Length: 278
Image (cartoon, rainbow, N blue to C red; front, side):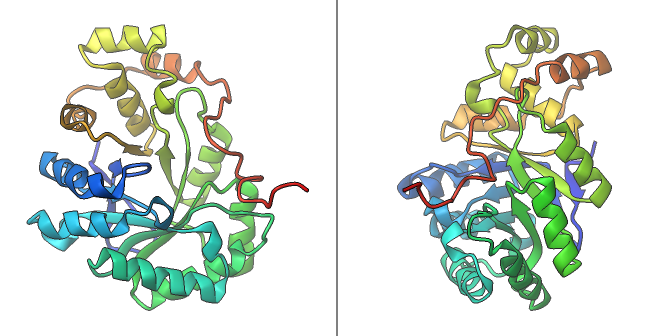
């Protein structure tokens, strides 16, 4: 198993393991990212909506690593949907990060109630053509959203970052991604702790002398997903990275597949971002 996956439209590959900074306070972000990079992470995932892009950039610049050694993802906020709005938002993210071109720029949510994600995607294609971003993708898009942006622009996303864990495995969406050559990225990859106490996961962890979190991360990687994890605890940061020294068997993969309950922990992409009912 390689440590990275190719991305459409870029000569860069995306590392399979990413360090996410959702809900990490800005004042803790630079230190947490610095620890992650020192431990061996080479992929940092942030977003305009997280409020910590500047601190991510600070950590990358302070790491001592060459720019091309660190893969940085950020995302366009729901409030910045629209052709001109998305272009301005990207320039603001570039300024805050201050690390040169963004490796992967994502539409954070489709917000179908506003119906502006297609024109936002058109802006993304131009940002990539201008060299401001290396790859473009989406986040929390359903098959219907994907089909529409491809049909109306002719440009498939390189990646789709979605909620995906053992209790919410999204097999139909993953099949669509495979057919279209879209990389699947998993957020809430540990199910927000939902599956770590599961006896099936615990038994597999015991067989391999690993933690439940390491088993779940390894399962994600063997599905060819990019896995995003988050922790500000140094020991946990290192533990989540240490998943290359073992392999799950076909029967263990099947046992985890059987845990799917279609159980979300986050919002429904078809409804999130809609104006409140009156």
